[in-house]
Length: 276
Image (cartoon, rainbow, N blue to C red; front, side, top):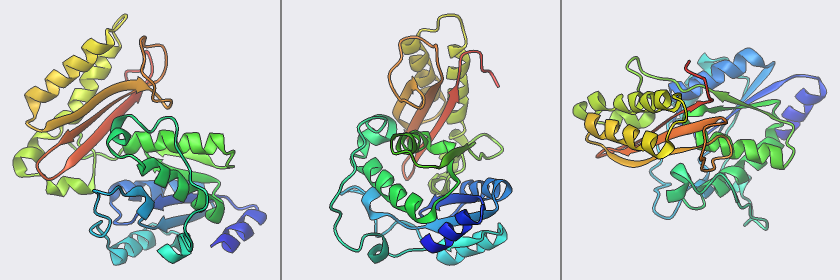
């Protein structure tokens, strides 16, 4: 893979790269489609990275369906699939460990210590192997996009980060492989997550918005509309993911909700005056 990507680069070809852990769904497919439109060649990597899993997260039961993934790649005219094994990516214990000092200890990262260290480690390896011109990530996992942005900037990777808008159902629910685990009642309530985010966004566009009050009203709306348990509602600068006192820059309003057999996340990123 490294030789192939080096040869393509020397030939002046652009490489679009979509890193995944497989079990591809429509969100991944959208990333592949955008990459296909924007590049001469597209590389899809499929690798369930053990470093991203905490001690209470079940690596062995992470869903896998390689035949399905290969059919998705073929349907989207993907040029190369990088499908390494653990012994390829981690032939010996790491001598150097990466630490994410910012952007990781909020939102989902707060309850997943070590997760983003695993993300930046595997991406550093994948960027060096696949040598992409552009790398594609879904905005649904906005915290991951922010961490990848920091990785690229801090370590001077010659890679352009492309954040692709979240793919949604007709009723606004963000598409996720976890949606199939919702009961019919939960599925009917889940679109309230996106409506709550839009309500919070609208409240933020008033003159001198009271940020704690916006968060509280967003929470109250969600509590009225769904019986899911709210994990967090946070309003932070983006992509820095720092607390804000005034609305004078780009921000993210993000939510996570627990249902009986699924935890759903969603977000909206916007600037002052942005109502689109």
